[in-house]
Length: 318
Image 1 (cartoon, rainbow, N blue to C red):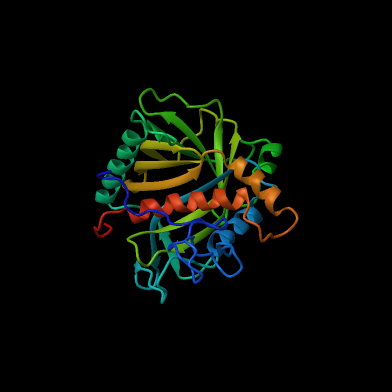
Image 2 (image 1 turned 90 degrees about the vertical axis):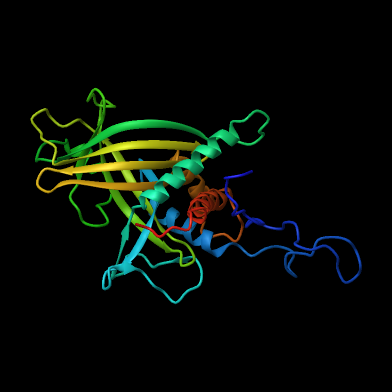
């Protein structure tokens, strides 16, 4: 199919699959066994991510799990990180000396928009038997307000969960329609980043960061509260089974410093509570050597991230 991804997945991480070649020493025409033990080893990369997600989501409410595509930058050089590795690598949490820039070059943003639109057309064509990719466009503005003393009831403050990973102060986010300025909901949100893992992809143009966040509903701020800054978002959301892809043009306005424009690409679980529940079922009694639905959901998530990164056109990030 012209124009659609050419990087295809091969095999599975869940156990025995079709061998690459037929024929064995005894002449029987059958696939080679996966190993002398007759099954594949557990995919350690996925299992590591899955264990990390389970560890950081136990007992949390209002969980969001997302992956942002961007670039890992070495703070000492302000260039893309270099590591003596040949393939996709998970960095230790809170590794010093690096920062993650969650931005695409404008040409890559455009290419991803075109790619996702092709997937929508292909999967919605007559006769297609797989799950459809559907999309919606949203034009919204997020306004961020300082939480003043007494603005939120004590019970609401207690419900926010662990503190921000980066130590930043909480902000109340109010999302309004870009056309009429009306609030999109009868409540606002407080988002906290609980944990992050960076993944370096030396063979690719971009890296990615997986974050575990909480998004807690809170009362709308009073009319007297002025926004500290706001983000004007022109977003296309693509949904497919477990995940959604958000492709967003963001114009952030800071009253003291002006406007900053960025192009962002992120993936998230449409319903992270399903993943959290599957994790509890799979890991509540300790680590397992069995491949579980929880591991498979994490694997699907990672593979969608990889497919987007691997289908970036060969242009240098801007």
